Length: 183
Ligand code: S3P
Image (cartoon, rainbow, N blue to C red):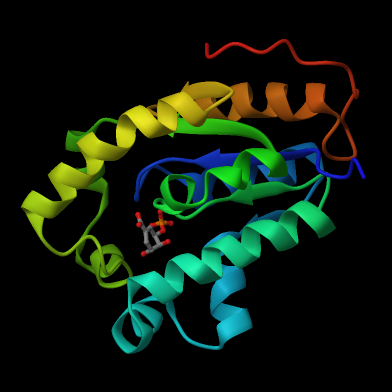
């Protein structure tokens, strides 16, 4: 079975995976799926509620299940992975081409305001966020097929569209081989 040909966005909380994922899907003529939203609808609880009622370990189990479902069932789609997912479920690589949206920690701290913090159980304590960022960053880099710095939305979107279209994702895709490389 050779189904997955998806473009998977990974990166730290607040790196713009959902914002760019939606815009990208629309631009190339595909759909956007977000692992957090899939888990919320499947489990019928919000992410903060899952963490509070069931704990992080259960949440990671749900992430693992969603990855196996995506691998079996989804193709030609832009997928946003929760910030911790690639750390706990490296099998995400089987779901498609993995693109790391790289944003500096200082910038992330500016982007995540109070409202955004409330949605993220692991973005509550400053020291923890700093520690998580530094621990995860090398893993994102290692797992990624491409690294796209997300400073200017328009530039990042163009780069992602180029990757997606070359992979043949979306109605406008050419379906030609993309050369690997982390540039
Ligand atoms: C998490 C990131 C969140 C969400 C959950 C845990 C993490 O997703 O999956 O709160 O471990 O970094 P976003 O990256 O979309 O904020």
